[in-house]
Amino acid sequence: MQRKLPHSNLYLREEELRRGIELLYFAYRDFTRDPDNILADSSFGRAHHRVLYFVGRNPGTTVSGLLSLLRITKQSLSRVLGQLVDEGYIDQVAGVEDRRQRLLHLTEKGEAFEKELFETQRQRVAEAYKKAGPEAVAGFWEVLLNIVNEEERETVLKQIEK
Amino acid sequence: MQRKLPHSNLYLREEELRRGIELLYFAYRDFTRDPDNILADSSFGRAHHRVLYFVGRNPGTTVSGLLSLLRITKQSLSRVLGQLVDEGYIDQVAGVEDRRQRLLHLTEKGEAFEKELFETQRQRVAEAYKKAGPEAVAGFWEVLLNIVNEEERETVLKQIEK
DNA sequence: CGATATATGTCAGTGTTATTGACATAATAT
DNA sequence: ATATTATGTCAATAACACTGACATATATCG
Image 1 (cartoon, each protein chain N blue to C red):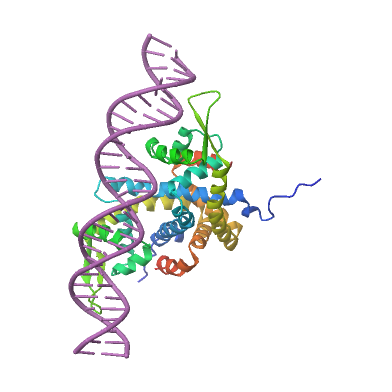
Image 2: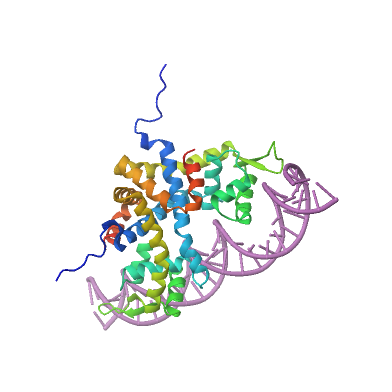
């Protein structure tokens, strides 16, 4: 008597789905560890890193721009951003067209710190890319993008193709 | 006069490294959103989900097994695990060979809840896999595994090949 | 047997990130 | 003039994780 296979599409069996879930957990955990270690010696945390990162990547972005990119609340961002501004890592400039806006830029100090934090992740990701090769990397991007919420996918695409 | 390209390995330029970093952030953010929404109606949070998940995947595991898999402290786990045991989602049985050990298992209630939480992520990941195709999925696994700390890679491999 | 190590549990304090809700101000748009 | 938008701020709360210290039961080693 023949046993039925769990699923015809082998890469869609529960086993393969759990593998993705677990790898995502472990990779993300280790991916954040390096910058977290550096941050531990500062007065900042992971949230500050994210703000530094995305302000660095989107110079001149506004508070609401950050809010919709990061999907956190204004009150959460406010504390973190306020500290970064107070300590001279981020500059706020009133917008020219709309003077209610605060256009955000990294200061030199902010750029230097972002660079230091980025360097640890750059090395880790570059190493992983190198080991896996360009085709694997393309698949990596493809799957990750499809894991992102459909409504967010356009925003994310705009961000990563900058 | 010819301009030198930023890097000969096109997939290793800063742009491509930042793409991976950003996709990892956005994908992880959305990947945790579905279970978080379900958990919001319970007295549990993301940490409880992780414990449910890994106990479900490793029935009979011990407290220290979980600790070294999740890389959190005993005190952190204690609160979360204690609540799950108190509310009847996880059973503890004294080990037969070593009676100091507490072997952990999901109860029926725990299994049902884990299943409900898993289902949301299963759908998201299955959808992403389907859209990207098997080769992309293989690349996705490969890169993620290489992002994991080298010292942890064996533990992770053991886990995902279960 | 006695000393040491291991597995687990617990208490107390702290820090970071995030949330909700309410309210305030300045500038822009209708 | 009024409404909306962009930003800021105050207060309270919750989840998660950490460190350090100490306790108990069991196992193992000499």
